[in-house]
Length: 99
Image (cartoon, one colour):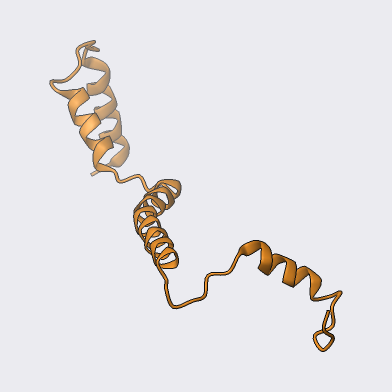
């Protein structure tokens, strides 16, 4: 079979067919279904989904640690201002001298 003759016959048949302005039945639906079926992977959405899933456990851990530190009765409750003053004055006051 001669490919050049076949090509000429196909081109002649295509030229003889009148051009139609009609859209095939359900063309839009088929195209939209094909577009939706392609799975577009977005890296930012993966990060966002992971961070939103991690937010609830982080809040739960924060609340549990906050409650635990508030109700911890084993440690001596010291005034934060006193601890801050002791830390700042540790440089000025030697440990062995008594004031």
